[in-house]
Image (cartoon, rainbow, N blue to C red; front, side, top):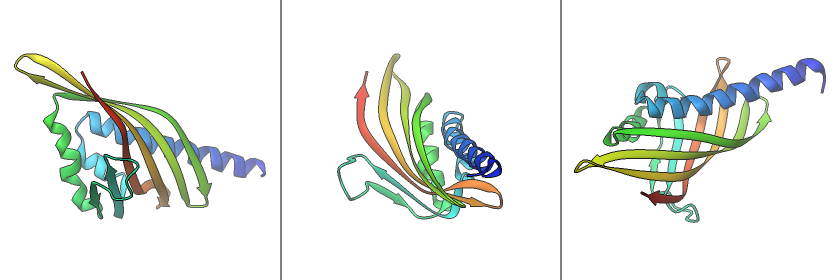
Length: 148
């Protein structure tokens, strides 16, 4: 791999990491429209509350239909998503990856704070369109949930 190829690969890896981090930032700031803009028009978004199941709990097959999924975060007083390790495999203008996240969801009921922490793995497919990386597919796998 020559120098220019290494620079391009580093730029693509950084752009994909920024995409993953932007998803979490939009979630925590309740920017559902911004979060939706991170996906391709014909995206596939799947949620697995049982990561061992081959059948998703929820499937959304277009960017336009993502709003209720992301808007649902408004049921919490606040959230904080901490992104952890991630892997990316590049293949031209396409890539795949796995990203880990600890998602904290705070509610207040009868004056008492309740915290739900979810350990999440995302299995992603990315595509570069118009010089911008987007999610082509995102599978959200909930490994475990803890209620405090």
